[in-house]
Image 1 (cartoon, helix red, strand yellow):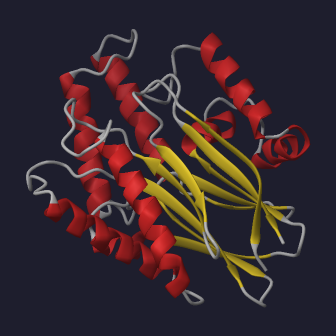
Image 2 (cartoon, rainbow, N blue to C red; image 1 turned 60 degrees about the vertical axis):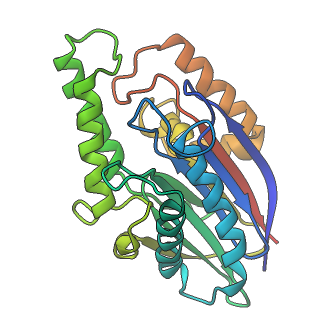
Image 3 (tube, rainbow, N blue to C red; image 1 turned 180 degrees about the vertical axis):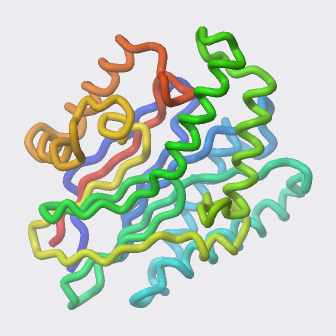
Length: 277
C-alpha cells in the first residue's frame, strides 16, 4: 500500500512568503504550517524564521521515514524536536528569544494491514475519505479567535493591525504551546512534544483518499462556513479540484477583508490529496 499524489496546492497569504509546506516520501506524507514569527526582525537565514523551520523539518522527515515501524509516529515528533534543538544550538539561537514553531500532520500507510496511521500536533487537518475520519485539534483555533476578540476590544474594534500588546499576547500563548498548555503542543525544540501528539488509525482500501491541509484552507469550513462540513468540502475537492476551492477561499477573503476569528485576513494555504494505491 502506498500514497499517490493526485492534487496539490500551495498559495501565499498576506505574509512575506508561504510558510506552509507539504511533502510526500516513499513511506510518509506530511503537511507543515509555520507559525508566523512574533518578532519583526528575523534571526535565521531566509525570509522568515518560520520558513527556515518548515524547510528543515521537511528535510528531516525525508531522512527519518525509512527508519519508521508501526506505531512510531509519536516518537518521530520527539526526534524532530531534538533535531530542531540541535539546529538552533548550531547557529547560537538566543536562549531568551522565542524559537520558531509550527503545526505538523503526518500520514503513514501501514504495509499489509489496510490501515493508515495519522498523527498531528497543532492546527492542521487530516481527513480520510470516504470514511470521513477527521484528525484535528480545535483548541488552537478557539484560542486564536478569543485572542482576536480581545485585540479588537483593545484596539477599539476597528481594523486589526497588530500592535505591541497584541504581539505580547501572541508570544505568551506561543510559549504555552511550546510547553504543552493543557496538553496541547506545537512543534519546535521541545522533545516533550511527544506527550501532545494526537493519533488515529483509519481503515482504508485501494482507491480511498486523504486530504491533508493547513488551517488556511480549513477556514472554508471552520471559520468562514463557506462549506457546512468537511464532507461537503471534500466532495467538491473530489469533483472540481483543490484549485477551485482555493479560488473560492480567496474570493471570499477579498470580499470580507475583516476576519472576526483570525489576525490575518488571508492565511497561507498548503494542501494535497493522496489516493491509496
